[in-house]
Image (cartoon, rainbow, N blue to C red; front, side, top):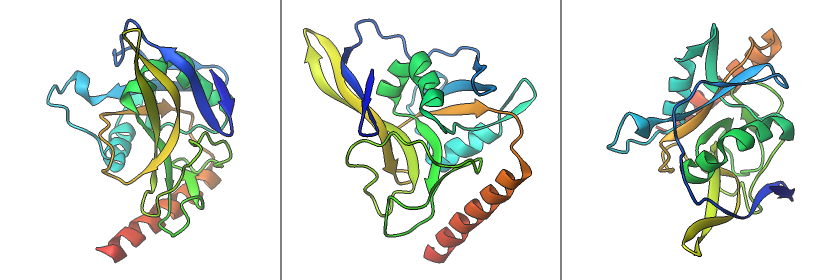
Length: 204
């Protein structure tokens, strides 16, 4: 895997034997001190019920592990994102899961992105033409494949994409169980989410 211009190239990655979405214990990273888990709704629901971003966020926050409350994953560095790639690359390619990024409504889709924890939004891995939707306020992985190569489905690249709350047909998301954030981060998060909720109410 290589990176270029803020997006990941799968270098025509081929998956011959697919075993994705398998439930397993959360993965601990000493790099961040957090546990990470891939949540796939379809493992328990064969009717293919998809998540909205807000639904995935609520589900993540209702979960706990090792005494830690969950939240949608926040990828604050390339090294942290590599944890997901190393452990769940096939799930990223097939599931295109939600991540914990969002922004306030506004005409410029490149402005105002933040993490659900209030951590600085400094690392990015956008696809080359993303973000590009004025009404797309939520973050997820997007992948594109080049079709079968010698009978095996292959990908040329993947990365971050902005989407509306319900526009993605994804049934999965990444959850992070991290240590309690600093009070300042909690205050910033509260202000951001309050602003998003107020804006949505004004549009109704």
